[in-house]
Image (cartoon, rainbow, N blue to C red; front, side, top):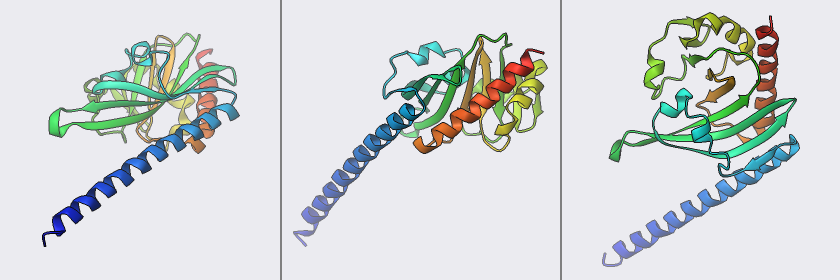
Length: 209
């Protein structure tokens, strides 16, 4: 029995080291895959945030969903004529032992379109909803319309291909943000960007009418 505790301690330490090693390998592997995916799409990749996007997009509602927000794993550049940034957005809710980490996959497009500000929140994205998104003025399809109801039908039509995905949509100062509470895998990024561009092209056509 006198050797039991040291043995348990050694096994626990070994397990901890193995978990940390696996986490480090997993992160490096994901970064390599993201960098490769960016290159294949003719875009660039940065594991950190050289653009200070937490400030640049500070007026988007996702920034108010919690605290300690940060941006990582940015794929950026022009894709099919659009200036895009795809990134992971992290924030925390609560404090102390009740603190939880949340992560969103985001695609942001800075456009020159004449678009009104608006916010549509997915009815399927119900965990830790930002305060401003808890009161809607109506609903169109999967989306609760928080603001900009007069433009919501146009937006919903343009982004109708997202009807089966829990994404939140917002326009602010001509920038369009697509937010998903589901973490996208590197192999999915090309598909996600192609879908986003298709919807942005729809929006451009419809907003021109």
